[in-house]
Image 1 (tube, rainbow, N blue to C red):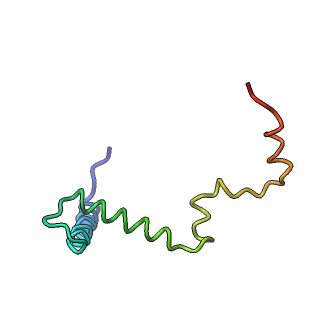
Image 2 (image 1 turned 30 degrees about the vertical axis):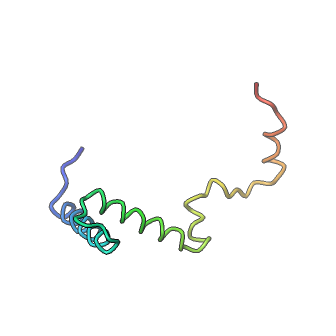
Image 3 (image 1 turned 60 degrees about the horizontal axis):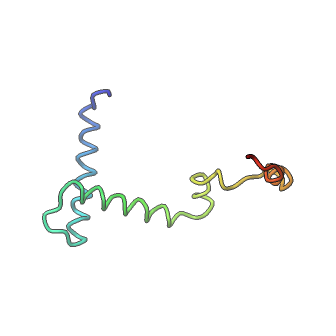
Length: 81
């Protein structure tokens, strides 16, 4: 593991502070780092759900295949035992 730079530590601290503020706004009294991380994860998940489908596609690219249907059905023709 490489040591983090001063700038990286500053960015991490700023992100945790944002999460702590969000946690306080959500009603948590005396939030800790765990609460901050949870709020940031909720915010990230909410952001991903609001993305248009075209922007989400790269996240789940394995489910979108442009192979012809016959190629996809070929593997189902064989039973592996």
